[in-house]
Amino acid sequence: MRLRPATLADVPDLADLDDLCFPDDRWGAASLSAELSRPGALLLVAEQEARPRIAASVLAWRLFDELEILRVATHPAARRQGLGRRLLQMAESSHPELRAAFLEVRADNAAAIPLYEREGYVRFYVRRRYYHDGCDALLYRKDWR
Image (tube, rainbow, N blue to C red):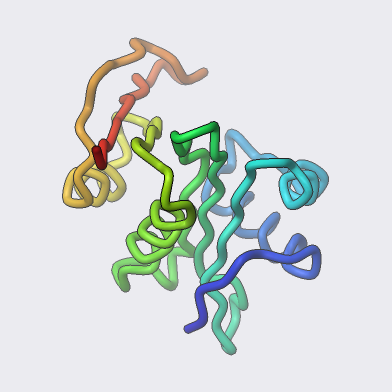
Protein backbone atom coordinates (compact mmCIF):
# COMPACT_ATOMS: atom_id res chain seq x y z
CA MET A 1 0.00 0.00 0.00
CA ARG A 2 1.39 3.37 -0.99
CA LEU A 3 0.21 6.66 0.55
CA ARG A 4 0.75 9.66 -1.69
CA PRO A 5 -0.74 12.90 -3.01
CA ALA A 6 -3.43 12.36 -5.65
CA THR A 7 -2.87 13.20 -9.32
CA LEU A 8 -5.21 13.90 -12.22
CA ALA A 9 -4.82 10.26 -13.28
CA ASP A 10 -6.51 9.26 -9.99
CA VAL A 11 -9.67 11.30 -10.57
CA PRO A 12 -11.80 8.53 -12.16
CA ASP A 13 -10.99 6.15 -9.30
CA LEU A 14 -11.51 8.91 -6.74
CA ALA A 15 -14.92 9.71 -8.23
CA ASP A 16 -15.88 6.02 -8.03
CA LEU A 17 -14.79 5.90 -4.38
CA ASP A 18 -16.67 9.11 -3.62
CA ASP A 19 -19.84 7.73 -5.25
CA LEU A 20 -19.54 4.56 -3.21
CA CYS A 21 -18.83 6.24 0.14
CA PHE A 22 -21.04 9.32 -0.22
CA PRO A 23 -23.98 8.33 -2.46
CA ASP A 24 -26.15 11.20 -1.21
CA ASP A 25 -23.40 13.82 -1.36
CA ARG A 26 -21.27 13.05 -4.42
CA TRP A 27 -18.69 15.56 -5.51
CA GLY A 28 -18.04 14.01 -8.91
CA ALA A 29 -14.98 13.94 -11.12
CA ALA A 30 -15.09 17.63 -12.07
CA SER A 31 -15.12 18.84 -8.46
CA LEU A 32 -12.44 16.38 -7.36
CA SER A 33 -10.29 17.37 -10.31
CA ALA A 34 -10.67 21.05 -9.41
CA GLU A 35 -9.43 20.31 -5.89
CA LEU A 36 -6.08 19.21 -7.29
CA SER A 37 -5.33 22.76 -8.42
CA ARG A 38 -7.07 24.62 -5.58
CA PRO A 39 -4.60 26.61 -3.44
CA GLY A 40 -4.41 25.09 0.03
CA ALA A 41 -6.16 21.85 -0.97
CA LEU A 42 -4.67 18.53 -0.02
CA LEU A 43 -5.91 15.32 -1.62
CA LEU A 44 -4.17 12.15 -0.47
CA VAL A 45 -4.73 8.55 -1.55
CA ALA A 46 -3.90 5.04 -0.45
CA GLU A 47 -3.00 3.20 -3.65
CA GLN A 48 -2.81 -0.57 -3.99
CA GLU A 49 -2.05 -2.88 -6.89
CA ALA A 50 -5.34 -4.79 -6.59
CA ARG A 51 -8.77 -3.43 -7.43
CA PRO A 52 -9.94 -0.99 -6.32
CA ARG A 53 -6.69 0.81 -7.12
CA ILE A 54 -7.53 3.71 -4.80
CA ALA A 55 -8.48 2.08 -1.50
CA ALA A 56 -8.88 5.27 0.53
CA SER A 57 -8.60 9.04 0.28
CA VAL A 58 -8.56 12.18 2.38
CA LEU A 59 -9.46 15.63 1.12
CA ALA A 60 -8.56 18.63 3.28
CA TRP A 61 -8.13 22.38 2.98
CA ARG A 62 -5.36 24.25 4.72
CA LEU A 63 -6.57 27.66 5.87
CA PHE A 64 -3.69 29.57 7.43
CA ASP A 65 -2.74 27.48 10.49
CA GLU A 66 -5.85 25.27 10.44
CA LEU A 67 -6.78 22.16 8.53
CA GLU A 68 -10.37 21.46 7.53
CA ILE A 69 -10.92 17.77 6.80
CA LEU A 70 -13.64 17.59 4.14
CA ARG A 71 -13.70 13.94 3.10
CA VAL A 72 -12.32 10.70 4.47
CA ALA A 73 -13.30 7.77 2.24
CA THR A 74 -12.32 4.12 2.46
CA HIS A 75 -13.54 1.46 0.06
CA PRO A 76 -15.66 -1.13 1.93
CA ALA A 77 -13.24 -3.90 0.91
CA ALA A 78 -10.33 -1.98 2.49
CA ARG A 79 -11.94 -0.90 5.76
CA ARG A 80 -10.57 -1.77 9.22
CA GLN A 81 -6.98 -1.72 7.93
CA GLY A 82 -6.03 1.70 9.31
CA LEU A 83 -5.92 3.44 5.94
CA GLY A 84 -8.23 6.29 6.95
CA ARG A 85 -6.20 6.82 10.13
CA ARG A 86 -2.89 6.82 8.26
CA LEU A 87 -4.14 9.28 5.63
CA LEU A 88 -5.63 11.50 8.33
CA GLN A 89 -2.28 11.54 10.14
CA MET A 90 -0.49 12.28 6.87
CA ALA A 91 -2.80 15.26 6.25
CA GLU A 92 -2.29 16.53 9.81
CA SER A 93 1.49 16.43 9.42
CA SER A 94 1.48 18.03 5.96
CA HIS A 95 2.38 21.51 7.22
CA PRO A 96 4.42 22.18 10.38
CA GLU A 97 2.57 25.44 11.11
CA LEU A 98 -0.80 23.74 11.62
CA ARG A 99 -2.29 24.43 15.05
CA ALA A 100 -5.72 22.81 14.73
CA ALA A 101 -7.88 20.61 12.55
CA PHE A 102 -11.64 20.56 12.12
CA LEU A 103 -14.06 18.07 10.64
CA GLU A 104 -17.75 17.29 10.43
CA VAL A 105 -19.22 13.80 10.57
CA ARG A 106 -22.72 12.38 10.42
CA ALA A 107 -23.99 11.38 13.87
CA ASP A 108 -24.88 7.94 12.50
CA ASN A 109 -21.38 7.22 11.15
CA ALA A 110 -20.52 4.57 13.73
CA ALA A 111 -17.23 3.68 12.03
CA ALA A 112 -15.78 7.18 11.70
CA ILE A 113 -16.65 8.68 15.09
CA PRO A 114 -14.47 6.30 17.17
CA LEU A 115 -11.60 6.79 14.70
CA TYR A 116 -11.71 10.58 15.07
CA GLU A 117 -11.99 10.37 18.85
CA ARG A 118 -9.06 7.93 19.08
CA GLU A 119 -7.03 10.37 16.99
CA GLY A 120 -7.65 13.17 19.50
CA TYR A 121 -10.60 14.97 17.94
CA VAL A 122 -13.05 16.44 20.45
CA ARG A 123 -16.69 17.14 19.63
CA PHE A 124 -17.52 20.79 20.16
CA TYR A 125 -20.85 21.31 18.43
CA VAL A 126 -23.90 19.52 17.02
CA ARG A 127 -25.78 20.84 13.99
CA ARG A 128 -29.26 19.44 14.56
CA ARG A 129 -30.98 17.87 11.54
CA TYR A 130 -28.21 19.19 9.29
CA TYR A 131 -28.36 16.56 6.56
CA HIS A 132 -31.24 16.20 4.10
CA ASP A 133 -32.46 13.03 5.85
CA GLY A 134 -32.59 14.74 9.24
CA CYS A 135 -29.35 13.29 10.63
CA ASP A 136 -27.30 15.55 12.91
CA ALA A 137 -23.80 16.72 11.99
CA LEU A 138 -21.14 16.47 14.69
CA LEU A 139 -18.32 18.99 14.56
CA TYR A 140 -14.92 17.97 15.89
CA ARG A 141 -11.69 19.84 16.59
CA LYS A 142 -8.14 18.74 17.31
CA ASP A 143 -5.55 21.13 18.70
CA TRP A 144 -1.79 20.66 18.60
CA ARG A 145 -0.75 23.82 20.44
